[in-house]
Image (cartoon, rainbow over all chains, first blue to last red; front, side, top):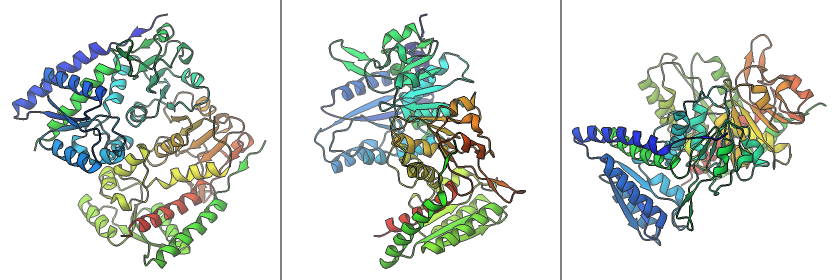
Length: 281
Length: 281
């Protein structure tokens, strides 16, 4: 058996079209949508992603403005830059991880909830948990989007999420519960992780360990969604959290690269466009 | 085999002592802790619970002020009463379910997050989901408290929660994940619910159906926690969601009445005292 590939690039291309149409309609209404991105000057991965978002934004008609800040910045100065950067834009994204002297909780809370395109503000995390989502973290949305693209009937299926991060595992759990799936969240401290994962008809992996999920974790025919993004210097590209050998067991598999990533990018841009749309008086 | 009883009344008595000590220390610091409760005049169960909270508050040194509002109240008038009621008290509790003309989401958001003793404001739900809890819904806290009281080592165990409500199932999920358990959330739409429940070493039930969980749902030796509260007119007391016959299979069982309920009451009062404590300049 060889898994069907869930083609993130093709899905991203479709989203690119709808994003372009939305950006055009905003401009016709006199709104120039803008997204600001803040990253530490020494954050190579963060700056690289900010640049790629800038290019992707340009293609659909969204202005993306990356701003660097000194790695050794004090919390007060960061707060001031965040406030200034947020003025005159519709969305704000702060790249993670933050320099260690900054308090992530304080940063999350300082983002205007109406401009919080990655859904990190407690208010937005809460609205999602209460079943009234506003901005949802783009990676979690992307995984659901890929899952639905398979067209597989979800009724009667079980989902397992590996990883409990506030930006992927936990919001995805809310999304899958809202789809009426029973959901198990497991993590690095789970006893017999492979056995728990083998219960999954839908297995979503976001644990941040390259190729950790091997075929023994996978129920034959399962839909496997890989949100891993582990940069490999030697190979010069990222590796997923799922071993490609899983394709021999799974029914569906999203590859890395070319799976969750490109769809996440478009959904993040979409969130920024929606923020611009909501800003209309 | 006969399950050990998890004695909620005994645990509540211990909490009553610590609550009394906390209330005394607040008074010594010049703070008279006060909790306001809003319920519809026609809500018999809500008014009865409000009165019992008033009595329980009196015993520990917390002033509880129940206020009724007309069942047919308009949203605007409710909002005004909520605002007025919140003045001069440290905690506010709005009894559910609300009359159907009121918007529960709007009511949740109108409660001052600093006085939100049952953790229903999106900000508080979000802080819990992000791992930085402020006020946590008292029923979820109560279930964790009962679980820990068993003294059973949780490492390597699996938890299953039946029910995905925003006030019990979902916050309990966050609490159990924070304890490093893998957690499955299932619900009325889950295929083969008994089989999923039998995976649980820790089974928490909050589904709102009297005695739905029968012995076939339970793994021998499991810890079973029953948050059911289904009033039975004929019997004149509430019934749990768990059939008492489960005691023949489970290792531990919290009874209804006398399990989750009395501990929830004390933890709700504790939240109000903490709100008063936090109000110190």
